[in-house]
Length: 103
Image (cartoon, rainbow, N blue to C red; front, side, top):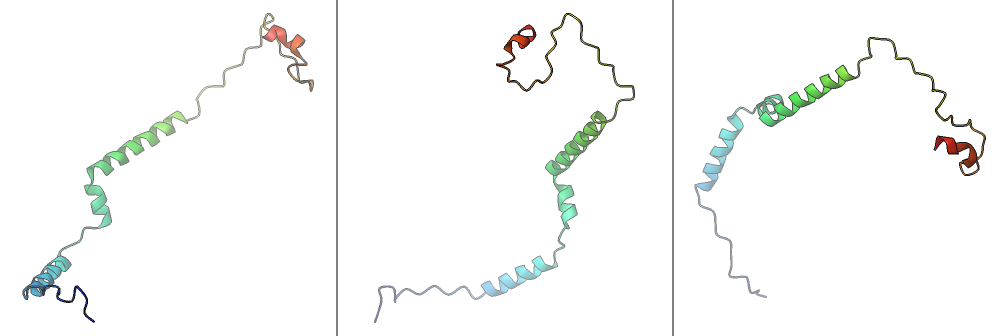
């Protein structure tokens, strides 16, 4: 049985192609390969990002430091301010008369 594509055969590669490919492979194998650290240090954008993260870390550490003084005293509520009643177990709708001064 013959098919419609029987007459088509792939072209054979040029005879010198094998020698050129093997020579290029030898050159690539002999070339020094830079390490991961060298590649990372060579990338300018990565160095800028690393510096920005370092600055943010330092800023966060400075902000999170404990204050050097005593904690400020909380002023007691003035007499003219409304006082919210203590928890009675009722809902706000049930306590509306007591909450009106606070609103």
